Image 1 (cartoon, helix red, strand yellow):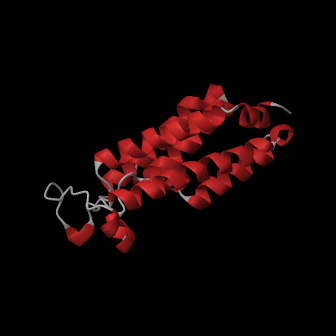
Image 2 (cartoon, helix red, strand yellow):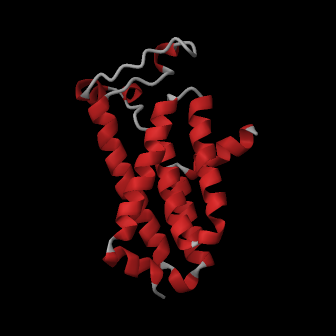
Length: 165
């Protein structure tokens, strides 16, 4: 189970996203532009998440080795968010990228959507189990990743890119 959660977390990383895009480009040569759309969507969602992380300045549960259940759940604002990475917990970036990828891939290949969202859910579970994020961090990451992707993919110019040959 630990290995499956680690693999799911990798899918939400930058390198994981690039490798998924390469796999899409190789597997679906007629629609290779889907790989570019995937990268564009995940980058857009990640930028929104990074901005929110800095603005919120939320302390990670693992900061200062706080025991599970005793963490401070403070939002410290941009001063803390700009100063130190341990104050950039909200939203979870891995979860956000995993759900942005899953939403994109589910739009491209609807028959496998359950698999894509299961992997994204595994990435979210990994972040909480590894004591890197609060549950609210991963929920916010999942919602933001889904919402940004949904809005970007609905744009007519972007839709034409990935839905035509």
